[in-house]
Image (tube, rainbow, N blue to C red; front, side, top):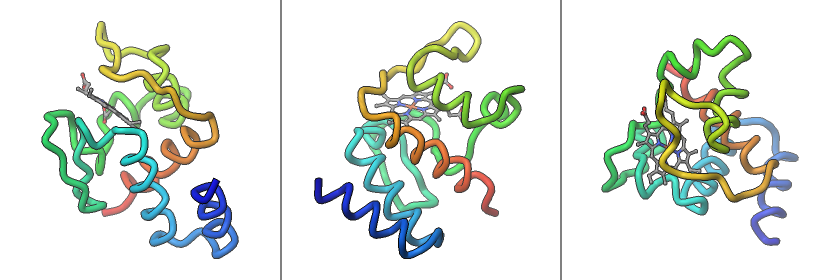
Length: 111
Ligand code: HEC
């Protein structure tokens, strides 16, 4: 509940990159993405070997229906990479998945 209030407070502050980074970092930690993925753009380290989520691959950005649909589908194992499913199944809320997808896309668009 405190976290929801925190997200809502940030939404009122405005859509600044700093607020988005804090929300995205927290969501990635709370949902255990960081067990496998590092995110160097957010200074998140990981012992895992999964790709750095600071940048998205062409599988994601080149998806015909858009990167957001790809990420959401991948997280639910509805969209595959060739024969491969994600090593992780999303168990959080749609709202949080929405924030993560938007956050990763925004991060990828930075230089
Ligand atoms: C158990 C380890 C594991 C966890 C936990 C995990 N992932 Fe992954 N993820 C992977 C691996 C491995 C790949 C690479 C799959 C491939 O390219 O074949 C991947 C790929 C991805 C990709 C595609 C990256 C690209 O550019 O192609 C995204 C996006 C992603 N993960 C997001 C997440 C998010 C968000 C979370 C947390 C909610 C998460 N993952 C949790 C292992 C994990």
